[in-house]
Length: 97
Length: 130
Image 1 (tube, one colour):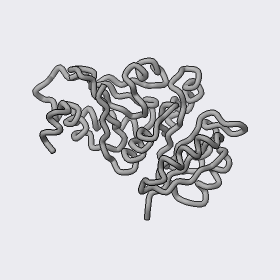
Image 2 (spheres, one colour; image 1 turned 180 degrees about the vertical axis):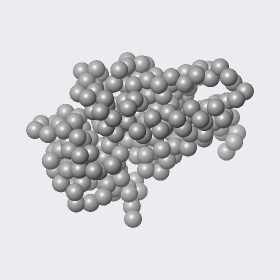
Image 3 (cartoon, chains in turn red, green; image 1 turned 90 degrees about the vertical axis):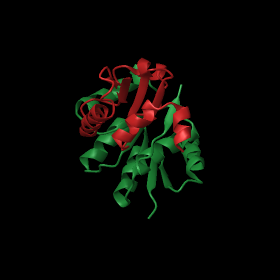
Image 4 (cartoon, one colour; image 1 turned 135 degrees about the vertical axis):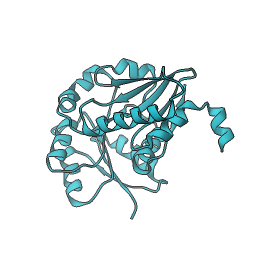
């Protein structure tokens, strides 16, 4: 699974803390998928990528692979729940409800 | 007590759009037509979330946010701006200094505003599937 975390900047304490929480959650949740990658993208440096991924607000976590691309706002969310929800396809999520 | 949002934008139409969007929401919304007025309101009452326009006359979004943080307010602030380098360049210095803020793309729809507010204020997860 390839993930991109879009942030406003990379130096704010809350962003550093969010990155750590997401990295921990990835390590916990996707042990069976060691090829998982997390890329941190600053919208300040790369607004074009944000537009291409249809990011509306920071922080947003995008699953770019496997397709379909999925994304979720990551502000103050439970990181493990966030990763789990992005791993599932929408049809699986419906089945869970 | 309900959660309270402040919108700081010099454009009346934008302030009205925010008011309409949050009219039926569980959140209380105040608006300010300038950075100076916004700072006055923040000094008078507690806000849980602030939407701040980047480009405003006399005191712009960068100056307003800088002053807000210097006064010790840690309220989450979403700076509303287009995702273009020309606009984002104004925020680079703040970003390099580690100042806390988030960015919301302009133009933004009512549904997206509600999703951002609910995510920030309630910790909910909203997805988009492209």
